[in-house]
Image 1 (cartoon, helix red, strand yellow):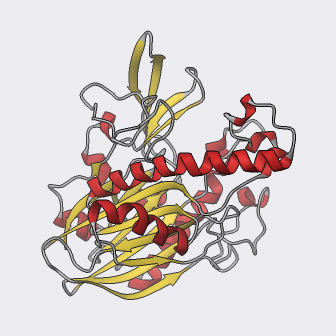
Image 2 (spheres, rainbow, N blue to C red):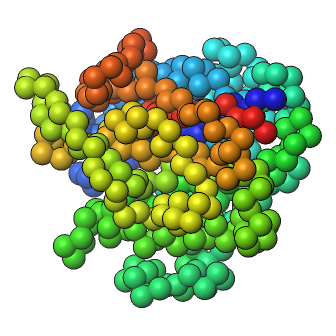
Image 3 (cartoon, one colour):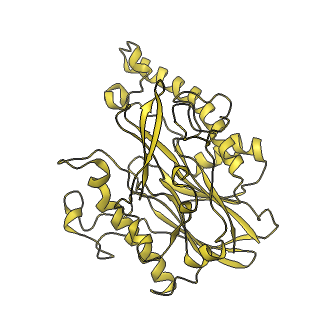
Length: 368
């Protein structure tokens, strides 16, 4: 029995307009900066038209990427609400894959922008095995104090009674053809701007370390500490961190060089250090593990893996000869691909936008 399990940061699947850019230049879209818009009413009218037009292209491309992933269960990040997820599935995805994803789950979490994690599921796998949900739990209410995770490193930006998860850890207890599977869907703290001489990744790492420790605590509390190795669980989502990356040197005119880094300190070491879970993307070539291209001009650009399926040891052993697939056809043309990785982009993909998302969906076929 094979289950296709995927994860995708769909990037701002929103049902709301954000008009704060009229007063805050940092939130004003670059195309509107080309025009002299003097009244807030005119700004709102133009911004609404821009968002509606661009969103239609973007969501067609997102749906294409999801259709190509062909997951039986798809974990999602950056979903505004259940209404947004239903509207996207019915208006875009249904037109490509039919009534495949009948079951949708989302719990409002802690994100200040209102973006949540969610899950879409089919009735059954491609092999005809029934997918059933036994229970679903949100852990958004957990605080640092609840799990004794408050540290001096966190004290600079947090309080002991603050929520651990900046979005949520959504736990789903499932059976697939009668076999148990636990999913933990997460979207960890983003790598925002740095302070006090630290880059954004280093500055925010204590928050992600607390999140990964909390995820591990939740799993160990469910199965028993030291009793998780033979259980079926997967930690899915956008981890906003990496243990390695590929530095990109060059530009369109001169060409690119791709230089893999060595082992980097990461909040994800909480999962990998003692074999608690396996990042199965490591089964791919070092230049071919990336799910996101980051660039701030030619001087700062790299490819990295932010999106993960962390398998329990039991699942990793049972699927030792398999590796995840990465759907990169929705990437914009500005993304440089290492040699041999080029793909045919979807119709209407732009230099920077429209695109399916800034992230690539990943999916893996698992024997349970």
